Length: 506
Image 1 (cartoon, rainbow, N blue to C red):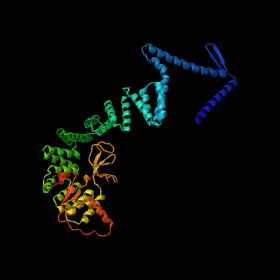
Image 2 (tube, helix red, strand yellow):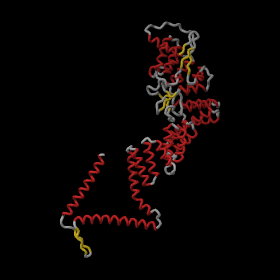
Image 3 (cartoon, helix red, strand yellow):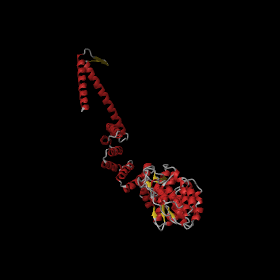
Image 4 (tube, rainbow, N blue to C red):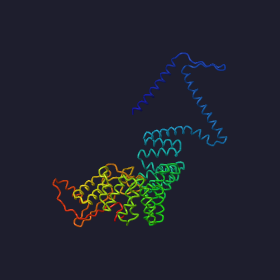
């Protein structure tokens, strides 16, 4: 409203100024004398102004006629579009002005304005490959998904804009949760522009979610080929995909192919714990236990992990506890001060009923780096050495509130996983699970029970389960009275249930 009022006042001011100027010229004496080729012309001031305006218009008209004449001559010489360009020049100017305004509106976040400017530019320019791009982005910005999809479909009709149309519809399908259609569109977009990094990443993620491991490996190779991925990262992720292929083939009963893929995964990334675990299992099935031991030893050098210890135990499941301790020296001599190594040694000595050595191996771990597992192992040691039930219950109660220790945690969303997986179950990210201690507040309740060794006490007179002892310990803490004395059991057999229980059974 205010802007309209300003324009009206400005127009009135111009008319008033022109009227006053004309009146002053009419009252002014004298004039303009023009002499040319013996001809003399005298003009009053007002007439001189009018003559000047007419002269400017005449010059403009002459220039236009000259331009038309040039266009006609070009047309005669074979330029078939010369005349159309001449007459369309003004339309193009207006069209490009509208296009520029549309881009400015798009950059400013004014979706509706950008759509209007794009429609105006299309009216003058007839260039849908330009105007539809702005219209589609503007429609998405303004929340008109139906209009955006309509424009994207129009973009599919032009080879120059087909990739943009496919990519736009793909993103819409992803937002809707239609990953099947999105994956097919991602494959088409990748075929149109294999160098496009965003399309590569989207296709790789969707293929991993759909467990299309062979297709994902091809996409990963394309990323390496086009320089979008470092070689070391490529090898690691290719190993993850090969391992996933091996697991699928194993479930299908295609053992020969599964063995090849498992060994390939371990060769690509020897420090990938799940790959080493499956490769060791493969070598055992192939009758090559020495190869399995080498694979696990190399992985243990990179990172001690309980799954590697379980796989190492599975190489010789029928050996005695003493034989197992001797064979495990190949692992325990590597990183001897690592918490995983110390807990492994303690478990081995507990299985051999050598509780003093188990306590020595565990050392001060329950004080310097207490975890639910290390504290539970300490409870097993106390039980094995004949400590009172109150002492054992105290350790078990402490284990309940202790840290769960390292777990498989997604580096992107921080979600804790019970088992390693190539794709995060929470955010869908590929190859983002790391073996580390979760951030505070994420570990409780999220850790799998298989990562916590449980004490199973085989006493004929009075069986006790860790959970029952835990409840009794909590009840004892609420009472100030001392607990009733209990007769010590004559014999205790303590068993540690490991992630691979069968491999640790005596």
